[in-house]
Amino acid sequence: MDFRGEIRAWLEQNCPPSMRTPMPADEYPGGGRTARFKNPETKLWLDRMAEKGFTVPTWPKEVGGAGLNKDENQVLQEELRRINARPAHLGMGISMIGPALLEYGTQEQKLEHLPSIARGDIWWCQGYSEPNSGSDLASLRTSAVSDGDEYIINGQKIWTSGADNADWIFCLVRTDPDAPKHEGITFILFDMASPGVTVKPIRLISGLSPFCETFFDDVRAAKKNVVGEVNKGWTVAKRLLQYERTSIGGIGGGSQKVKSIEDLAKEYLGTDDGRIADTNIRKAIVAHRINDKAYSLTMRRSMEESSTGKAPGAVSSMFKYYGTEQNKGRYELLLDIMGTRSLGWTQAGFDPAELDTTRAWLRSKANSIEGGTSEVQLNILAKRVLALPD
Image 1 (tube, rainbow, N blue to C red):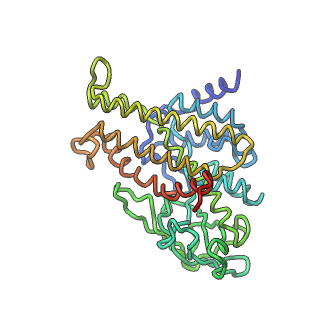
Image 2: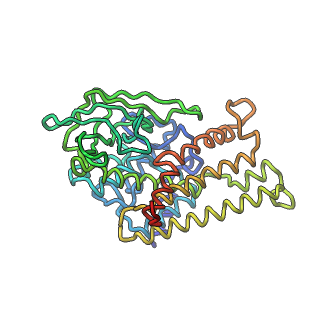
C-alpha cells in the first residue's frame, strides 16, 4: 500500500465519527494539565494522533513528531480535509513556542518541552504585549533581575490569550534596563503555577474571555529556561512572531466545516433554477472563492519553496495580513447572506449555528489585530519585502 493509502486507512479506522463534524468552541482540543474534555472522543482523537506523531507531523520523531517530509505532510493534510476531520490538537505550543524551540532551544529544552507539547500535556500562553507596549513591543518594561540560578520577574502583560488555562508561559522580560530598547530583552519560559503569577480574564464583545491580564510579583524563573542568549531575546521573539503570523494567516483559506457558503446562501436566500437567487451574492461568493483559491495556492507555493526547512521570513506578514482580511471578509459575506439571522445573541428564535456565527463574526475582528496589526504587517512588507524607502 502506498503512503496515501496507509494514511487513508489509518484515518478511517481511528478518526471518531464526532471528530468529523464542525468543532464547537467548548470542545477545543488544547490539552494541558487542567483540561476537561466535554466530548470524550476529543481526547481519544488527540491521543491517537499524538501516538502517531500526527499532532506535529513534521517534527522529528525523538521529540514527538512523525518525521514526515513536506510531501508526506501535504498528503496527510489532504486526507484529513477529505474526511472533514477536526484538528486533533491546537494552541501556541505547536504553532509558536514549539517551532521556536526547534530552532533556538538547547537539546535539553527540546527534550523537556517538545514531547509534552506534541502529546497535549502542557498548555502554553504568550507573555509579549504590555499595557503600554503593544505595537511598540520592544518598549516592554517587565523586569527580570538576576538572583543566583534564577531571575526574579516583576511586571504586567496583557492580551495573554488563554492564560487562565495555561500551564507554562513563554515571556519577554527586560534583563538590561540601560540597553537600547531592542537590546537587553531576554526570552524565558516558566510555569504559570509559580508563586506570584496572577491572571485576570478580560470579557470581550463576543461574550467570551480568551484574553487575560497577567501580573508577575517576584516570580522566580530558572536561568536554564532562557531560550537563546541573555539580552538577545528580541531575535527569538521576532522569529516566533513569524511563526505566529503564518499560523494566523492559515485561517484565510476557510476552516473545517460541513455547510459551504453556497449551501448557506441557497438555504437563506432561496434558488432560481438551482442557482442562488441573489445575483449580487452569487458574484460576491465567486470573488471570495477565487481569492481563497489564489491564497491557498500561494501558501502552497511558499511551502514548496521552503523545502530546505528554512524558517518563515518577512513574507509571513503577507500571509497574516491577507489571511486575516480574507477571514473577516468571509464573515461579512455570511452576514450579508443570513441578514438578521446572523445577529442573534440568545437561544430564543435562533439555532446554535446562527448564534455561533454572530460570535465568530465579532471574534474575527481581532484577527487583524492579534499577532501584529494589519498596519504593522503592511509596514513590514513595505520595508522587508518590497524594500521601499522610509
